Length: 188
Image 1: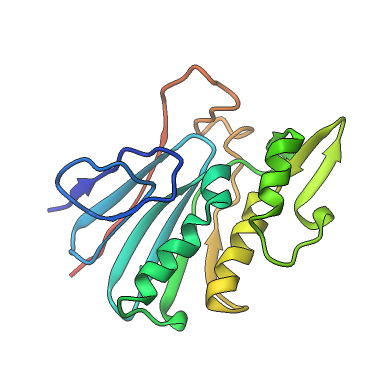
Image 2: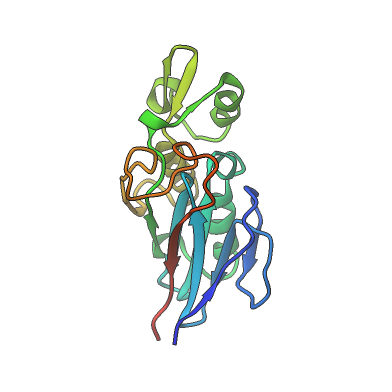
């Protein structure tokens, strides 16, 4: 029997072990089989993480604030200080807003400039009409590579939540309470 666990997401960098009680966080993890970790998104990236060595999983909610706060790095370090090795991670990144749909003002652009490793501005941002179109996926990849090295095992599901009507999007429908649900769980 699968039991779903979820967290009260707050666009933070808080990481918690999965619990029966509702916790405020943007990443949660477990090693308990059949405990499904749920993340709700409406343009942010749902990141599912698996460690083969420790048989642990994590579900991470990462919008631009999570990328700015390096929640993926902090989750990886949490795992690595408790038994995981660099070679043991697998990632799945679900539907999220793509670069052509994610425009921000200069203040957010400047904040995200401090969150990547080694990218030139034109590698993660396109400037049009005083707006910055940001590729969060490439920034996320540099953060993972910063911790694990140059060849992490990442699968990106490249569906743009803003333009694909099969997904909910805060940018497309800001008043909607609907969310995309992503989850991960361990078999025995």
